[in-house]
Image 1 (cartoon, rainbow, N blue to C red):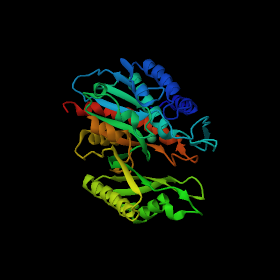
Image 2 (image 1 turned 120 degrees about the vertical axis):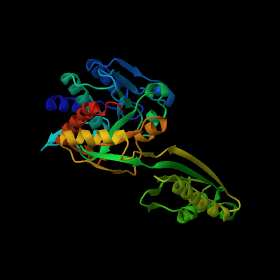
Image 3 (image 1 turned 135 degrees about the vertical axis):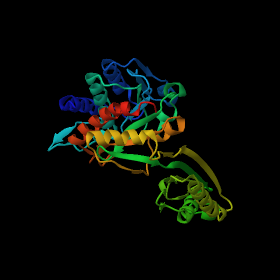
Image 4 (image 1 turned 90 degrees about the vertical axis):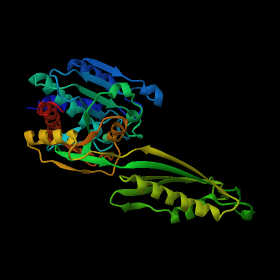
Amino acid sequence: MVNEDRMRHTFEDLVKIDAPSKGEREVCDYLKKKLRALGAAKITEDNNGSVNGGNSGNLIAVFNANTEGLPSIALTAHMDCVENCRGIEPVLEDGVYRSKGDTVLGGDDKAGVAAILEGLALMKETYIPHGKVTVIFTVQEEIGLCGSSSIEEKYISGIDFGYTLDGDGAAGSAYTAGPSEYTLDFTCKGIAAHAGMAPEKGTNAIAMAGLGISLCPTGRIDDETTCNIGLIEGGTAVNIVPDRCVVHCEARSRNDEKLEALVAKMEAALKEAAAKFPEGSLEIKKEKTYDSFCIKDTDPALQLFRAACAEAGYRVTAGPSGGGSDANWFGTKGFPSLLVGVGMTDFHTNRESLKVKDLYEAGDLVYHIIEAESHFAGH
Ligand SMILES: [Zn+2]
């Protein structure tokens, strides 16, 4: 069913276009042309680019329903790639795509984008009955889900549920839940002094931070809660008592009560350390980056997915994820979206790979999701 040549060409075209976060202009223009050719009734680029300082907005395309009474679904993927993603040259060998080794492959998330385009092409060619389909290609996913977090209500109102094609695992894998996340920046402030002549006049901000870190929980807290001290910066020279050290952390949980408790513990740890340095001070900046999402077994998004996989012959594996994706924000903003696997492996590294079979099956699955809508008349 899938046009394999077409899918390979589309995927290769897509990864060859440089699309770092905030630099999605060229890929956005490429996709506009594709969506027009596929018969989108309306194609809009929102103002997200100017909001977040990028050169492209989110791209939203509407395909009108050709049959009444079918659900209004969304198909989403992100246009940007994690660095290092400039000058990607895809190499297909023994059925597996890889980069030449000096960049990521960009299957995250061009596999998702290509799967959606193929599903739409098959929808057009086979004249199947379908409800309204809204395609959302977001920007700046990799730098904090910025595109999905600032998409305006008017573009997504009326969508019953959706599929975010941005997961690992082959066709049939889906993530039904993802955590909420906080990011925390602890700025330890001390007093600078000459390290050799007058260390007693100084207050060492790095020492304060180090003590705080030693008291702070980190790693896997339990099966749904994690925490990471990911980056520290501080000091100016070995002969100066440092007056500033910033500790950047994150905390995630699919259970919001546990998350609040963990964040409180982290703050308490740094405060306890700061108290040992009476001349110093501590500044805490915390931000809820995104909210958790959860799709129940009875939700139509998952039921339709199961129906599509049964029809196409893919085994369903559905479970929770520890990562954040655009699905988190779509859930917060009004429509539940299932995070669907498109086969990407070792993503965010130069070893990233994608089996071409997984790519074809992801396209086939998108088509079957649209096709299965007609079993859902009346929902
Ligand atoms: Zn992704």
